[in-house]
Length: 351
Image (cartoon, rainbow, N blue to C red; front, side):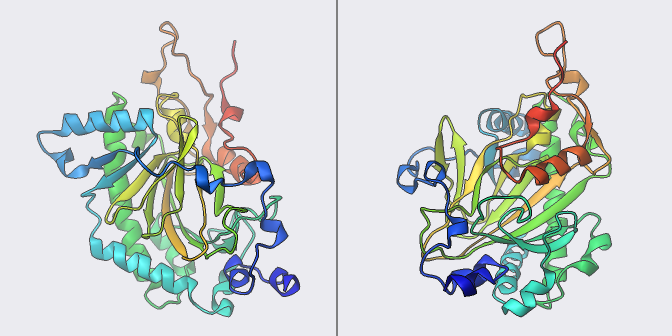
């Protein structure tokens, strides 16, 4: 059993032939999901209605952004302007992609984290010690015309559907960045202007059913290295967010996105807004698909705290030095989620 399982590249092809979790997926006892201790009742993350953003109540909504970003770093949004049809088609084509025969999927397999289109498994198979119960297809999508021809051409509608979705989500992100910029007391184009040419990646995450979900993670606790993440998830629970010392399960709500701050937002806001620890757990009876869009600076962009948020006299000096995003991104992949975040490596030196 183990022998045939270990010859498989992807966890979805292992999941279908094992009745226990292979040893390389088993977490040390101190680092397991503890599924019985998760907060599922009560507090969830804030829900912001974007409909009001362009009307007379804009100031109220900006205030909601400010609270959500400062105290949670995670929030849900509704009336976000991405058509329901676009979302449905994206989720359908993602499911179709992962349901293709192994021989079709593995054509896109690569363990090279620098490849702009690749199917892989776990997180970084080259440098991690314990594997994660996840396969993923990662795509670069800005500008779309530079990358669309390397995306999978099967299922046949994959490129068209994914391009439409990526374009629609990018428009949403630009609206969010203006609101977040204003909520920091900055001009609305301030954050956007720090990103150079801008970068946008997507992941299609596939978490197959797992025979022993309490022994492993879909993804262990981590923070996102990018600026902002917009997550689409199906109806199966799995996302958990760390708040006030405990893990909270975020239940999927139809027609909403989950938005979270990444490390670059923490840097740009000079620690006003924090990048938040989150993870994915798996379950024994249902597959789960989640589709995060990672919006980031382009690799050559120089990121640092916004000048207006630094005030040496009033006890708010720059917490971080300025750096090229490429330097940050490389560190993130090399460290393979061994630590929750690599942001501390970029702190300003104390004089």
